[in-house]
Length: 361
View 1 (cartoon, rainbow, N blue to C red):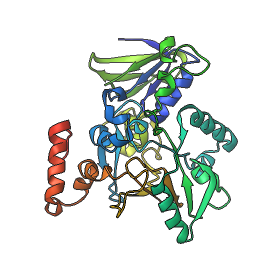
View 2 (tube, one colour; view 1 turned 180 degrees about the horizontal axis):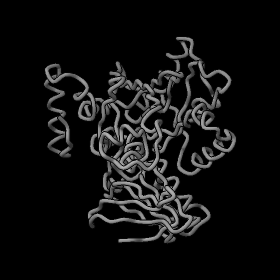
View 3 (cartoon, one colour; view 1 turned 180 degrees about the vertical axis):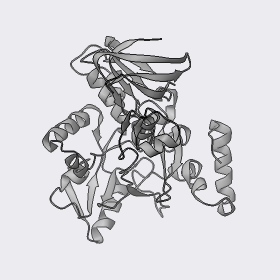
View 4 (tube, rainbow, N blue to C red; view 1 turned 60 degrees about the vertical axis):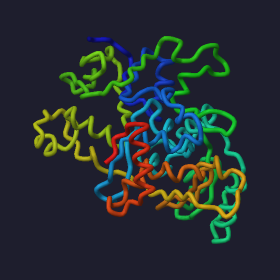
């Protein structure tokens, strides 16, 4: 099968879905996503559905360097469909190191925030954490709403208390990045998807990027429920890799772009030798607490990473009380040795396996 597109995007996660919503207004666009539609799971829509949705649609990985558990999403919308639904801007120092205009990047962030992010709601439990952190001398940034490092660019070493924006307002449903093309905008009678310029392949995986003799990306070999075939861009078209932190460098190397010694080891024909592919991982550290309370506080059943303590080296936050048991199914039981798992933990894992059929050890 050969279909010509102006743009092909590999990966329908947070960045890929957002990019598709823009490129589809400029030309015929194909978005390739290996997972299912987020609408298949009600757990993706509601605050109390987390972390069940992560247990279902996150492929867990263990970082060999730090030992931290991480993963890659397997659902349309990626992390925006299964994570804690908070909107935080990416580290400003990363964009700066790439030579990008920070004002232009900030403008794009504002556009995305206006499109799918809402302000978080003040709750008693959030205020309790803010007061506790404040007592320990940490500074609250009152004018920050999802800014992260952009809130104090002059002092990146300062630890601050900041408020997130959220994709999951208390009065509504989650708005993942794919909502940018799935829903109607205020100034349009139809969604971008309905306008016909965007094609979305679900349950479809990219096998490798195809190059011409000039080493220009011209297409992609894909594996889908309909079979294996190739898709191509028209002359002057572009192929974008938005498959995430782990899958993007993997796909590059499978396509012949990466360290030559690594490619030769696996008998992959070299297209372009680049020693940096697969390196430079930024392994951020996050501590998320769910704590038993001696009394009921407003918001203890809905709060989800709404307030964070942010430093250059780590983040700390807290989640609603119903997340504790499912946290064991999602991650807790897998991060401790089997002999140390409690009977309750094993029961919770068994329930997850029986109900969802998730592939856990």
